[in-house]
Image 1 (spheres, rainbow, N blue to C red):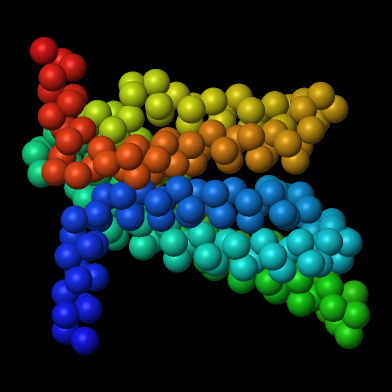
Image 2: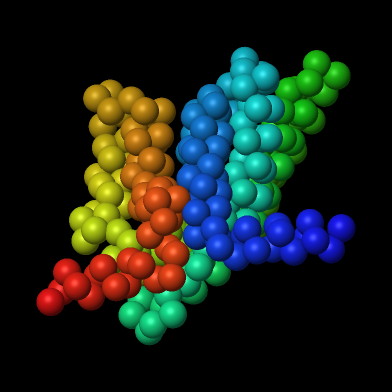
Length: 237
């Protein structure tokens, strides 16, 4: 048994970056897919939510499961992700990973909120009671998630900055996140032109794209023995 554990430990130690990258990629994919399965991402109208969830209960349940899986997988990837040994980008790296891990706690809690909406649309639940509970969840109770949501966005930004500083991301990488702003604005300002659902999912894809990109680079071996730091240095010369 000890030999097996030592073998596993040695495998993780030698392939830590690749494993972390695969987990970040899986976490990004399942996170986006969980929101793609929701009837209308980004709305907090309790009556509309109950009607939409009632019409797509199976998809909503699958979304809850995927969102919980994404939180667990993403945090595991952040824990295993090897940080830079040199000072360049190291602070942003650790702060970004810590903030993003904290943000995943809010994502997991949000999945439970969605699960509550799923259960409230069960035929045995009266519409009046369901609406009263959903109004609380989408009103005062929603404020409980705001610190975690803020940590999520800040973590994504800091991790993207760290990726650029260490050479794991090209300098244009963080601009993918900036693209989410006009897309989100179009979703609100031009509802007749920009389909709200499509615009919301596009904005979300832009936000998580740098983290997924870093995950892909790590799976290619760029995180082993700070290979990206040496590459970044040679490119600056």
